[in-house]
Length: 220
Image (cartoon, rainbow, N blue to C red; front, top):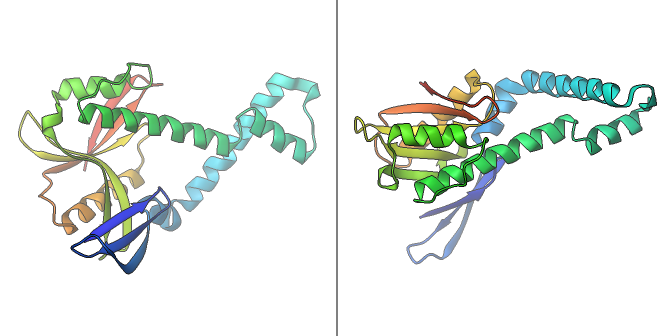
């Protein structure tokens, strides 16, 4: 019997016996996103970090003008304290994404998240789909693939109340959907099936962005 734990970077799978006692068999797995970033997304990530740094410096120039320091150490410090460094922007985005996923979990469990600009698109999608907790098959579920050597956490599998299809959905709070997102959800689908779960009729990416005020679904 497996027990899996981890975060966005890596997961560790430990095997226990029928009585729940650890067997000592431990298997490390990189996350799906770690694999994708390492193999196909490195150049794009470098460009994003560069672009965010330039945007941050332009903002600082507009705010401080001639008082803006010119030495590297001071500029680095100011970018950080103003929340304009690429790491700060990335972390803010991660926090927004985590909050949105928490709201999805509440909906799946029958809760009612407090409505905000950030989660309005998600709530609108949930209502339009006619979803209820009884339709939920799995949410925030760790997955792993021995065949391919990766792990991850899927956001949602549900039974569509309109046509009865079993749907695997990955929630994104980003402004843009890129082709690597489709690699990610396909990897989740493959791991889901490898673990002996039921057939998936369709896999979708749900983009729910509060800043844009929209939700869109993208199907594989």
